[in-house]
Length: 632
Image (cartoon, rainbow, N blue to C red; front, side):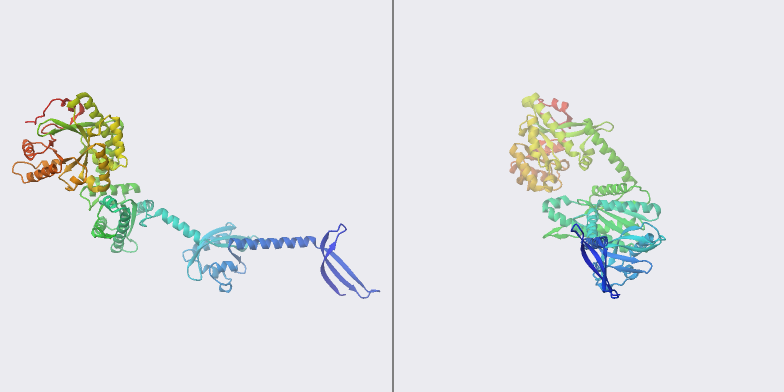
């Protein structure tokens, strides 16, 4: 009999409607002919279909929103389904990629394919059913994309893997961002060189490798540019930065030359890494050395390269570097110790006159230990009040009367006795203790001058003279600090004389001029110390508000009967007098020096011929004595 099937909507007694299948069956033999209709309620079936449709729609929307490519690997048939998005994220059209597993793995980066096969194989062979892995895959244009693979393994009734499926996400932008952040964390922003963190990590690896292969040497070079601060302050930080960049390129070139020239064979290659540690300090790791002399040759090559002038913003600049070398022969366990010894050797090179290199050895090791001992003692000296002040008279040459005292710091060391600044001031400057020490000495000198004025009245020295280092005089608030110290000591400004050296002026002429002008306006006396040595320039005598010039003791030492240098000293004194300045000669020790200086018209003298530096109580005994006479 004829039969047809139709979906209809039926109505329940309560008026609600529901879907049904209506089956129509014609019965032609019936009399009269009849049609049998069979109704089947399909409400649950339609609900299941709608739920499935919604799930499929949600899945499709989720995949489109995630922008992921989908893959489905039928293991038994060895076929892989790649969704259109999987292909398009690599630049391929629908028909460009087949369905064989090889169509996938042949595009994976050669360095990544082995690990990808291992991860997938482990999941297939019974490992975790879920796996995640990052790798690179080739795009249609030949470039590589970083992708994140997610997958799940599906097994059949017997537990045997039959299918793998998952997604692939393009994470190239994220990887590039991570690489950039990692690069920035390990490289210097200005020069692009590896920074201290990366250098120390490489150095640690080199030390561990050296323990396994003691026949392979490596070395660390510690470099510090000579006079960089002068260039940076005088020409500006922009030129200073350009200088650092140019020096970095020259260092790279020197190390590249070493890599080629020192290569022995592929099993023992040389390599070098240049790093900027900070400021104008650089470090170089030279690996694969055949002999310690190879490191010295690199240092010599660097010195030669840096001797060539640099042209920066229409300025022709000459620079040099001091280099310390520490060679590792299996005798180091810590990276910081090796870098420290190279740093120690660098300071040795600077002390020998700069623009040279020094190699760390047992002698320097002993010196380094001695230096550490001195540094510890200096810190404890400040805490234990071991510093004392001595005072040397400044005598008027025409009358022999005491005009002023120069304050000089001494260290009453518990083991070494009384020490002069020559024994400890350099270490104090290098360790940063000079500011604390100098400010203590400054306050103590003002306190003592105040006590003399109260006790001796008119017999008290006119002023106390204090030496200020470059770090002290260059402090932004030095004028305010001096004014406050004078107030606390209840002193007029003209009771203080500040001595600065020519080196301080040369290094910071513009800022020093402003500071000295403000101090002179305050009423403080100013002297130029150590004139006649170093960077002597007559322009300082009229460009800066100086009222006294002190001729250096090393220059005074050569004064004597029939000495050609007498005329130079006499010319300096005449010039200063013509400019309205007074002159003090330091280090006067002989009667012949005194006679010559008196003939030249020198104003004041200091020296052992009259009185050596004295502690405050002995200096006080000189007040009111009248004229001081030279020792016979």
